[in-house]
Length: 271
Image 1 (cartoon, rainbow, N blue to C red):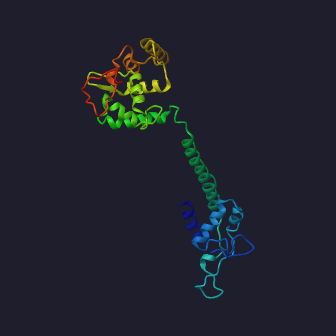
Image 2 (cartoon, rainbow, N blue to C red):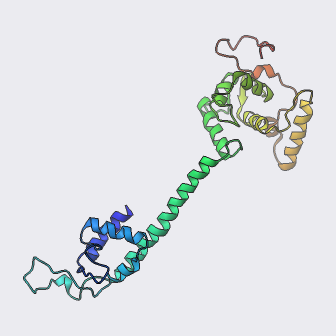
Image 3 (cartoon, rainbow, N blue to C red):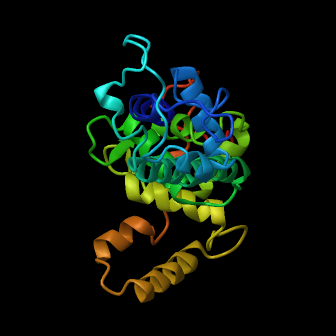
């Protein structure tokens, strides 16, 4: 679009300059036709003697004779010679937009894509939060901040690691992580948005996760204290959503496979 606009302007302003083989406006470098104007602009964009072409388009240049008039008759438009001092503005602005602005924009696009391709997906970042919010919204159509606990497994399989499970995650590992998350389930069998996100972050980064014979309540209390120190004005209600203090019935958060009904009791041995 930039080349198209400048080529049309160049044809209207500099198209009547007489071709002179001793100068830079010649048979191979002119604004006579649209194609030749594009070629001239492309050469200027590369930085090849663009300033010489600009000086050859200034006012006082010889004009191409008008074949529609009688011999030795000068067109009124050609009085005072062809060319214009507008060439300064024309060429300087074109070089600025093409060689500097467009080139930097092109390099920025390449660098952005290179950063995306080389980004370590194992490190939690803002893009993981965006993915979690987007996928959560697919299951929370009413935007109430809660989803049924049976939708947890399917939702996490649609999220890429490390925050999610991924579609190729074995069921045994997926259920093990769900139990490790220690998710609180409300009376209506739903899980909260904030609690789910915090549990996923804790298990992904292994932040004070109780393993083996470790005291889960003590670890949760320590994490609550650390968060209270960082954010002293955080309401206790929000803190309770972030960190579940106390024991929770973990078997209620295990997602049954489609072959089993959700209202059937869960056998801990099956897990």
